[in-house]
Amino acid sequence: MNMDLVDIGANLTHDSFDADRSDVIERAAAAGITRMILTGASEQGSIDALALAQSMPGRMFSTAGVHPHHAADYTDDVDILIRRLSSDEQVVAIGECGLDYFRNFSPRDDQREAFERQLEIAVETGLPVFLHQRDGHDDFVEILEPRLAQISRAVAHCFTGGEEELVKYLDMGLYIGITGWICDERRGAHLKEIVSLIPADRLMLETDAPYLLPRSLQPKPATRRNEPAYLREVLRVVAEARNETEEKVAADTTRTAEEFFSLPRI
Image (cartoon, rainbow, N blue to C red):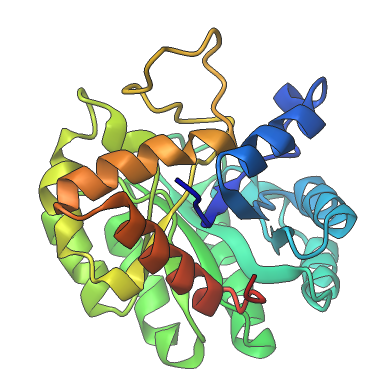
């Protein structure tokens, strides 16, 4: 069946794609992934994501931001760079930004400061925010909630939390990004129970490629590398869990992504 899907989170500038990036892009198109948002998660990553997006205007867009893993590197110069990148029409969101207390690759104080500064950029530019949160829920809410009234839109990217966290985010007005985590019978089974709580106009789909290969894929790929073409499997599992057709979920999530990121209609 013909599809029109948007992968709202693909790390396509990752070096695991260096040898066959054009083939990966072709396979995505063949699978009906008509547009991708390329994630900027560091200073260089944001530059690279925009460069790749500029090579395929209309099909690819990017975000500009610094992931909490790299928060210790968030300097005034980086802040200036993100502001500069955000003025490009291919940049459709600020982030990936937020808190990651699971890995703590950057000190928590640095994470909180980098998060706050990027939210300020979102307020000033009017761009939506692409959010990351792992094991830092309380601080995340404390920093984000007072600023939401001034932020145009915000998505909890790669949501993996439980019902209480989901309900809180929905109450805050957040959009929710679902990845192949929902396809993992060991870690993601709980998502199948709660994904139907997400209103159709707040749900979006993403691969987070090359990470989070859907474990339910058949036949199993030869490598562990995830790629945007596999968004179809995320769609299948989400549709099944919501007791909806794949066509309905595809149409709803694509419309939501178009509105959230202000993408041109195809």
